[in-house]
Length: 158
Image (tube, one colour):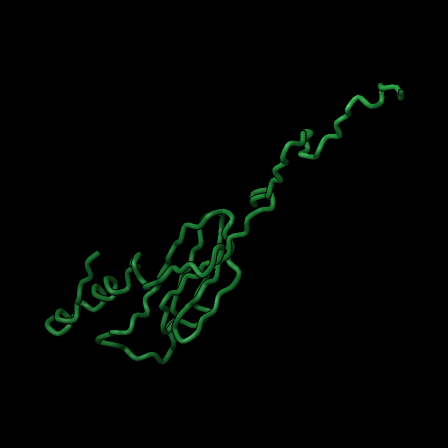
């Protein structure tokens, strides 16, 4: 996806501030940048660069197979009018598709990096079971050894 730099137009135009503000503040699907890492067999982490956002300005929801992370900066009353803004403060909404058995177990915002920890919770019924292999013994339908009779009950002692 290409990005446009409107800074040269700010220097040569007057009165188009609102138009450029609308273009600059539009939501981009590739922002903020993020990493997805696998930490273990059933553990994952999503790290998002959200410098300038406070925890109360970020909302995270998990519904079904989607994890939605969105941020909305609150304008302060005494914030300066910027002619050029190199530090991004635009709103964002990022959706991650996750499996039904993956759950969010925690989130942390530190030094401008939002870390979301996820874990795959495999139901007991889906976990692998060890099956015993019997050598030369018959088993019943519950995989238990059968008691084999040798006909000794019917024999008479001589």
